[in-house]
Image 1 (spheres, rainbow, N blue to C red):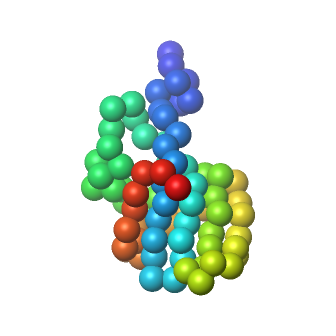
Image 2: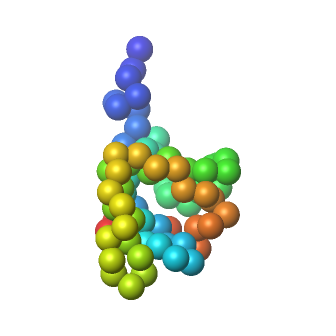
Length: 80
């Protein structure tokens, strides 16, 4: 049986909300696109290895894991 690590790829993403820029990783199934992940997401998406920045440039938070409300996301892009 395959482990979660072998069946998912950590993908770097940058997420913009009205207030924050969030940099971290989401786990995608190999071959999936970030768009597919967002379409299938429930109310929150899991982001790991996180940095949360105010749009003005101040680092607010670093954490191994946060949930981000899907409805608060304005832009999500692969990479940092």
